[in-house]
Length: 319
Image (cartoon, rainbow, N blue to C red):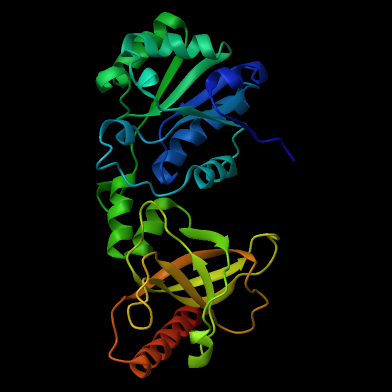
């Protein structure tokens, strides 16, 4: 298997990147279909020219620096983003800390600075709306002109559209906040997922007849609270089959109003997963928003209805 190289800065990466470097640049929050088009262009060019493909991305999001009271909520933590980027076939991921010093680099200095940090750089790939440099004054046209001066090819990738609108991270954020997981998945180009270690619960679900795997899950941008159709499996073995499930994500207002959301997953059928296991849950379809029920019996009736909807969802997929 090809080694996956992860670096905390361009300067750290330089000694390891000797072949001609084909570099995709962007925040790539969500690594959605539009991002994938930019990254795959760099990968294809590197393979055609016996070079190295890499991504230069940033953390934290620039808004954390410039709008600390209202930063842009991120779709994924950096470790998920890196994993998704590597899954596309990249050789390396370089994460540039987004500091005031980095943000102060003028647009006129950006590409020459990048070439100084990464001497093997021969080509840069960006989305056609990408902005850079102090005050975001640089655009793709400027980058292409500067690239000619420095002997660096600059490739601009047109933004993809779906349903007549540009695919963007902000659009996906809105869909997740609305609970429209089906359309969000279509724009992502993969299934939105949660990962973590199952924690012991108070076994209320078991007393109701619906035992659950309890997964603390508080992402920067939380999907809409409610019930979802999901599938789940342990993360230690990617060959392990997915298990159908129905789940509730939220603050459990009927039985225990919690301060942090929790993902409670009821597996449909046999389950060999338990507290202490690290699992991955994929979000497939939204069923209903979370709400407070009059009592536990009403909650139990609703869970039964949710379970039947989930079973119907999987039956239709198999048909």
